[in-house]
Image (cartoon, rainbow, N blue to C red; front, side, top):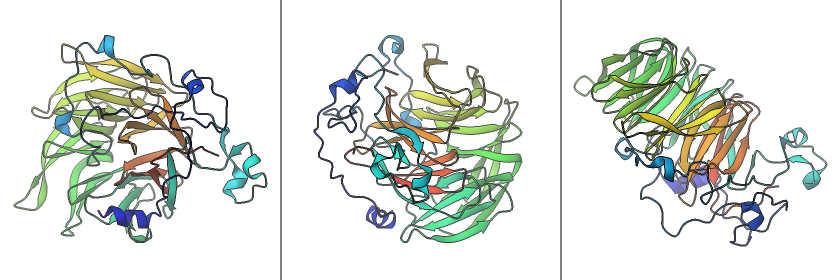
Length: 424
């Protein structure tokens, strides 16, 4: 995709005019800065050299790494883990901000207090990203967002039983596809766009206009992922179905059925030659991509496992039990929890990406209508995104863009700022 075109489409903002000193706030490090706005940075400066080469992959729905990049961890993780730590100790200080509630009068365009208003006049805090525009048209919750590689179109799916196609040149809706069933998830892989529906997966080739229906699922399809040349779907009846593309017949042939979960499979991710599945039965199952056998069942979550992703040599999972768990392989090869991050609300989805300085960031959507951005591995807070209803879908885009879809049907386009600014 033409990144310059993206800048024109979504009206990207230029560099911030904020000339704050490039020095980290001493009081922020101590967790007690009370200046607003503070003239110093409330984040750590980038290291002289990156920790690893490579960039975030937009080919997977939730993860940072390609399949082969997720490796076994160092068995000494217990003594050297930096999860939840900033500079080797302590939890990062919170960003100084106003009352964390968006001003209803500002939303309606008639707040008379201006900068003196105690509530937020912005859909985000932290000063590290900005809202470029919002795409309106869906009537119910947005459950899938994809931007196929090399395409100038953005595809969004919703519970309103439609997929909308947005033109990246104009930002306007270029078409509406009525599907007759709620969209449970979406995935793009190469020229293909996959849509999870009740009892079927739709597959569209955007280059050849091929339109296929993959039968076999029982109930709603909630999750889709590609690994080892197979397309996997997580379904309402707890099974995982796999298809293999047949080039000769230009079709997808059923390849396998993975059984083990007792309730709906709602999230899938691939890494380290493994398939990880999260379910409403509160468990995560680890499957071999070679044998398609279940290697391990992870049962530490106490409610629905809503999202899983791979980052570096770790597996991250979130749940309605208000926790994010970080898993790493023990000497035996089995996954164990190495860190647990607690939230005050249930978590809905995770999305890993890199900021404008190529630092890893985790976006976590909670059921309090808020998305929290955390530095990894410290889990120090970078900022928040607010919505009228919960954000169900987050997708990485090109050139520092990312997209969020919420329960009202709105799709918002965000970009990472090169230089953080003070929030109002």
